[in-house]
Length: 70
Image 1 (cartoon, rainbow, N blue to C red):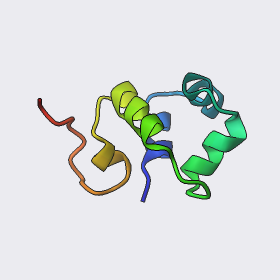
Image 2: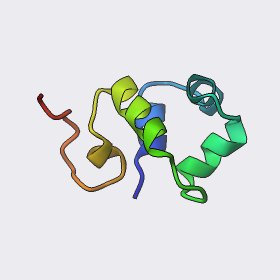
Image 3: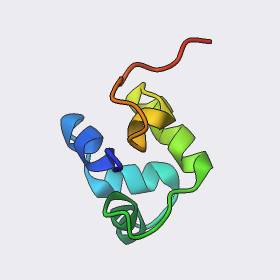
Image 4: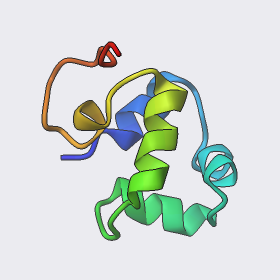
């Protein structure tokens, strides 16, 4: 379960906006949200920084949205 759509909508971002931040086309980002295409690790890291959460939360390995402490 990927939480990309929920995170994006909770922050009032469009798919086009997130796609531009990641340097991909909107339809590619849409495929990430729909789990039709795997998200590269580098993009997961960028998204976790954008949303202030962990990669584990984004991909559904934890239900805790807090980012890990260093």
